[in-house]
Image (cartoon, rainbow, N blue to C red; front, side, top):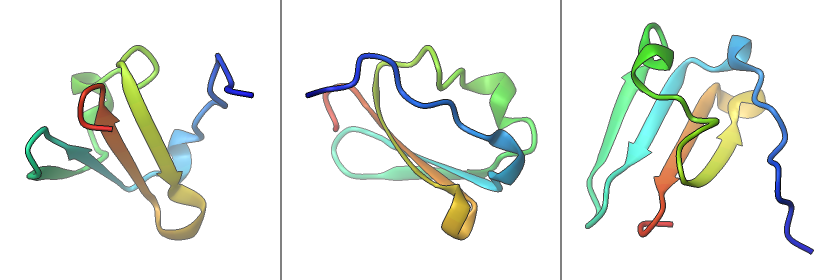
Length: 65
C-alpha cells in the first residue's frame, strides 16, 4: 500500500539538503536558509530522509525519482 501523505520531516535535525537534478547531477547545500528556497512538503517527487543518521535529506523531483 502506498502512503498518500508522507510523514513529516523534523527539520531541526537536518544539516544538508541534496537536490538530485534530472540527468544525474545533484546540488548539495547547507539547510541554513534552504527552507526558504524549497518547500519540500509541496514539491512533487520522492524524499529520502536520513537526517536521523547523518543529517541529510535527499530530494528526487518527479521525473528523476
